[in-house]
Length: 179
Image (cartoon, rainbow, N blue to C red; front, side):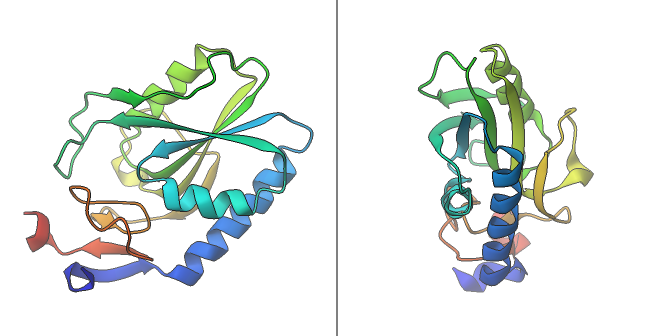
């Protein structure tokens, strides 16, 4: 697996530091609020786990799963909700979406709009990685771990064809692996 990585972009230590920094910021920003933390599956699972350890507040955790990729390396543009959150009435909650990477923004925009119809007090986004050079949809993260270049990244939840999620770092996948 490691031999398929061209270079490491974010190390294990840097990932821990990012989770701690963002968790502390979220803790300060959401004091006194009823927080629902929603992980966007499957990619956010590692980040959500580490991040939530640093959110020093009572909060509920839930998950949503959407798909727009299939088995390719670029978005199909067609978003499908595979698993919805359990809460149907969000009127009491401030919702925090946890994403692994904000790329084109199409999927996240779709999710934000869909959850917004349930009238939460607010919807915010925290993303581990931001790839602003590829943004198509009008969506911006409220909390960003780190900006990354326009390269195909895997590890720490991010995958290629469902593989590489379990790498303990974020790395750039060699082109010959996916081309």
